[in-house]
Image (tube, rainbow, N blue to C red; front, side, top):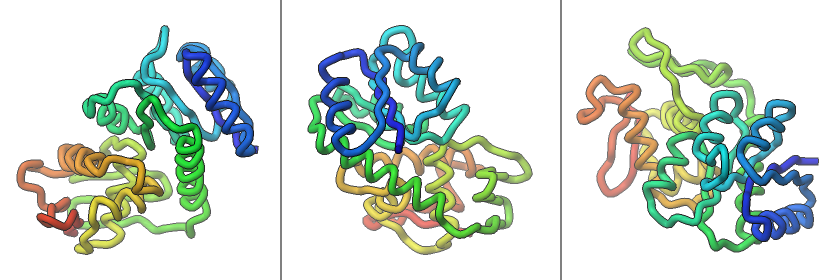
Length: 227
């Protein structure tokens, strides 16, 4: 049974989310603070984490960073702030999705299922070979990227986006297409998420991020990878 961890310090929210997830057939564990959750995760990592941003002791952003240093476990952030800056910060740290409070429990369950479907599809994909270009190499098995002779660090979603674009050189993808391919859903996530990840990737792989040679914008359409 798929194990879902809920890290939420508001008991009413945690109980409702837990109830709906259990009805959907998931095994659910609840934690009221980030420190207790991290101790439990060190012993056994869940299959997906639903994580409140504002937590006592260890906040959601810090816990997301710790999780990404150790695992690619899917993370869905819960936030009561509608400020785009907070949502972007969580996604840049490697979260897979975010939900703004108040939210529909049914919608959250749908997002959980969508993220898990994407993870399962990635795990069942045929073994892929490395992609090698003039100054960039991308290894989907080790998830390592080497740029101009130097290994660079990417978040899970940054790697997934770069790999997807590089697998289809010169093909133009809209932001909605990238959301569908990389996140597994396009209806719930702000398309600006793609823009943020492209910007971060350019900062990491381009010699001059302001004048990119690989990750190009096709104005009015989307983005493409130039090999």
